Length: 258
Image (cartoon, rainbow, N blue to C red; front, side, top):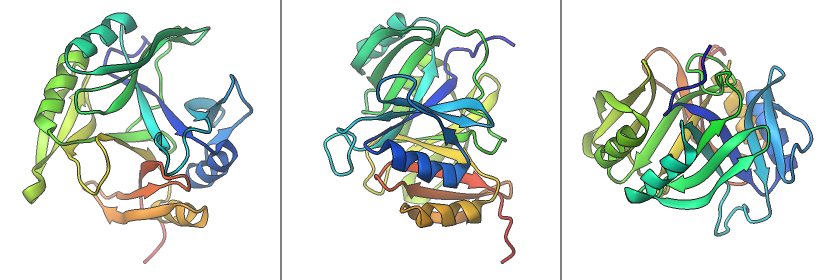
């Protein structure tokens, strides 16, 4: 199979101030495992022995600090320098790079015109990433973008990364919950942000048992802010923060009998 096309999510990274705590927490919630550092301050989350995402642990990513803990996604591009320049020319900002990571690839960290943080990356490997898989437990199943102006966001991400707007679900005063399509599949949705969260992506990670995962969140010191709640298709979602305050979502079936 060929590498991911421009616009695919290919990696997910947790920026946190507590590496050991994050390893234990997400291991209990999602089943990921993490080995030792592969680079200074950097560890890999693994799923069934294969890399899923990263864990960047530095003191500045402390709860309540100026740089709060957060999940950030990596978007595939054909040319990192060209993509970074185009984003800046269109109102985005460059925060790191472009730079090479030996034997991994070239990357840059940016924010879009509404302040949403993301990376662009060109991997060395020609193998496609499986970090995003909408139907598999342990993988990211859904990428939800919440911003003040959803239509402007869809236009920006469509222009630079090939995303297109799909079907929409009306949400009253919140406007539409519009699906995002890319490369022949639905990868997430865009909506108006609410609840005090800054403009950002909320990544939903697949789990085999939503109730067990929700219990693991609270049992591990995290907070469930919504759910488990039903969604179309028979699955349920949870919106939560980990013990350090990083937002994330979970999606999966309800196994326990009510």
